Structures are given as C-alpha cells and as structure tokens.
Image 1 (cartoon, one colour):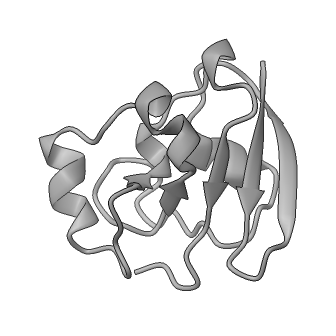
Image 2 (cartoon, helix red, strand yellow; image 1 turned 180 degrees about the vertical axis):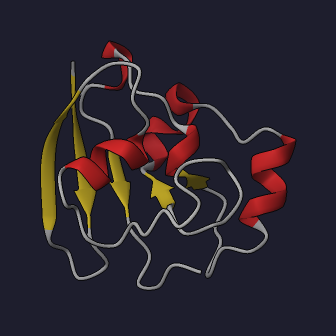
Image 3 (cartoon, helix red, strand yellow; image 1 turned 90 degrees about the vertical axis):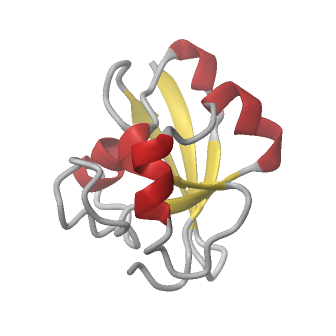
Length: 106
C-alpha cells in the first residue's frame, strides 16, 4: 500500500492510501479527489485524468507509451511531466508519489 498526494490547482492537498494494482486515477475517483474526471473510465481513450507528476517521481513512475502519448495531445496545458493517471499503477515503490492536477481537464 502506498500514500499518494494529489495537489489541486489551488494548492489543496489530498493524501490518500492506495492499494497496489489500482491506478492513480482509480484511487482518486474512489476517494472523491476533485479534478480528475476520468470520462473513459480508465481505458486511455480520453485525457480527462491528466496529471503532472512531481519531477522527483518521473523516473520511478515511468514515461508514457505511444498510445498514452497520443492521448496526451488532447490534454489541456500539457507539460513535460504530464501523464494520464489511469496509466500509472500503484505499487509500494510509489509510496509518497505527488501529482498535481491541472486547472481544467480536457
């Protein structure tokens, strides 16, 4: 189990316990973290679970595969550390992971 820190665009922080094997998106939805819409339910078919991975965590989280990369093109305000939270799987190695939420999903 890992603790994930979600930081809303206004600075509000949510620290959530996350079971291994779930995605960062699933954990946010199950814990009512605002700012992740997840319109496609985690199928990597939209960009409404877009997050910014804290730079200290980028290598541990990994980088987008080609399919995720193409969906990120639809994300509002994409950055170098942008990821779709549905594609980040929780493991003990991600204990303490911090992700920031964009002001708008889209």
